Image 1: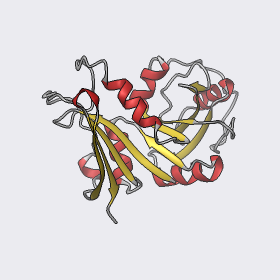
Image 2 (image 1 turned 90 degrees about the vertical axis):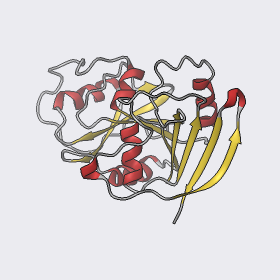
Image 3 (image 1 turned 60 degrees about the vertical axis):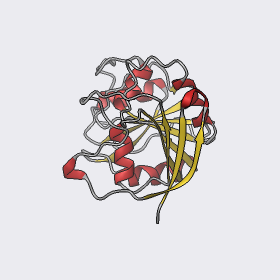
Length: 226
């Protein structure tokens, strides 16, 4: 599987776009992402909750009539594109089994509630398990490639998810759109974030291309340096 981290960043490396007030930034991000023609895209829980418009833990209870076996569940294997939701505890409330016209695949830990699994089954969504309490991304990638034939995956955020993929040495390419502003807010996350106790080593890259775009934006693409 070819994995691309596609990010949008201020000049000081911030990735949270609220308060930027740049109408051209998001369309440019989506247009450049589309050029990869990916089979799937992945985001973390916070981003997926924004997409789903679902509140934390706001899903029907009592759907599970007993313990549900912790085996991967694929409701659809022939989707044109998949939305991979990295959501270990099962907190994203989807209204349907699609997100932005992509079939939803929840990536869960095995200690997720049975009711959440029953809920996903009831709306026709898919799910895979990445570990007992934490997510082993290498295991997830292998499952998605084997079971759904995903050849190209775009990791689109947030910073913790992108950082986790890079830290696990799974990323083949980093694509960053640099927006012409300095954010400056100390509390805002950077494009890639890894907890100190989980950090392995720097990811060394080599420049593949640099393009100047409209509205003073720059598109940088780096490949993994083996």
